[in-house]
Amino acid sequence: MAVLKFRIYLEEDDSVYRDVIIKHTQNFQDLHFAILKSFEFDNKHQATYYRSNDNWQRGREISLEIYDKKYPVVPLLMSETIIGSEIRDTNQKFVYVYDFAKNWTFLVELINVSKEENSKLQYPVTTRTEGIGPQQYGTKSLLGDKFADIEEKYDLTEATDGFGEEGDELDATDPDEEAEAEEGQDEEAF
Image 1 (cartoon, rainbow, N blue to C red):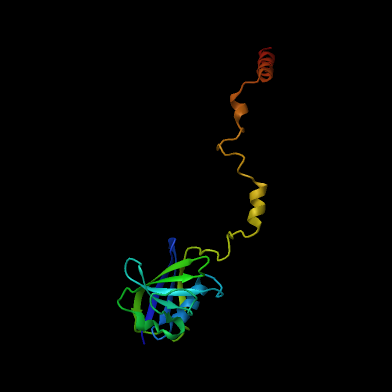
Image 2: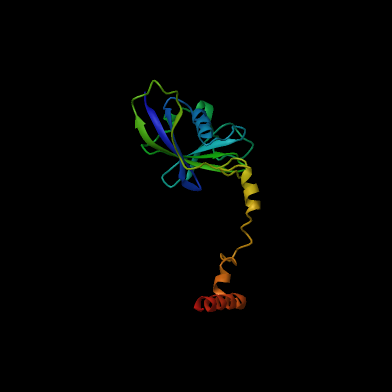
């Protein structure tokens, strides 16, 4: 049984990607759930794939369901479409769009075909994770909610020039300090 390895890139940043291995007999809905899980997205929104060429141009649509929109050709359904049936060449590409309001777009590329299935794995499975994936709902840093507190405490917007006033007193000469230094020299002379 053939096992397909897909690399799923975030469209805006190709350094953020996930490798997912899936059996050629599984359907696009299985891959859909695997992609969402690998990027830590929920599965509450609309989604569709487009068969694609090497230039990522969108072709035939493979949709989660039939949506209320105009289609040039009635789409295939993810739950009914076996992945192996849509593989046309050894580097087959698909464009995957999730949450039509946010328009999360992923580039899905077949990068390997293997005839050996690993009996220890439950397919589909994510085998590689590169880069920090986007947050599905808004921005959330690695520090979480505490980052806003840190940002307010150390408000860096005040020193926009890049230089503060620290160290300026080293360059300026204070007349009182000069007089004290001269007195100290006079006492040492006696």
